[in-house]
Image (cartoon, rainbow, N blue to C red; front, side, top):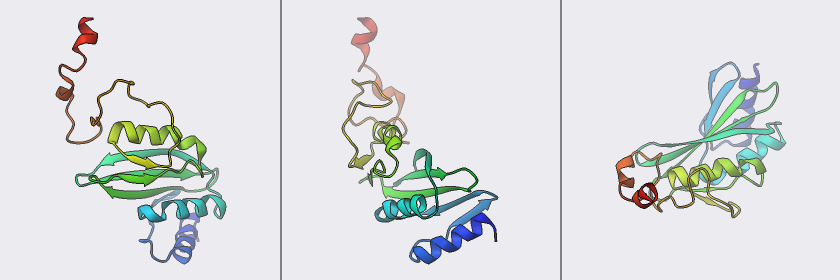
Length: 159
């Protein structure tokens, strides 16, 4: 069996209610995870399967939903992507900083750029948008347009 097939079998045995993982190619696979199971699955992958790194978190606007892709890997293992979808009307996800403390900056990006509520995210500075960026404007959402900023920063430009 391949590394990927072994992991698919282990995921299915440990989490029988998850959709089947998809092997995309050698050393690359993904699985959709309900938001309520994210921390349990991620913790198991880290502790029981040795996935010690979170490479990044990518957030996308998929119309009615926001999707978050957590890219996990370790040396010699397949890259596994956990995909979580939540409704755009209530974009809440739990922080993963208890498992991967370095994810704090990725999660701050999700807050600033997509308007995600990351429950349990430690307090801190905004990232990556400037401190005076207008509330409620999320530049990675499909309904956001640069023209929405017209007039907001005029004083600073004409200053």
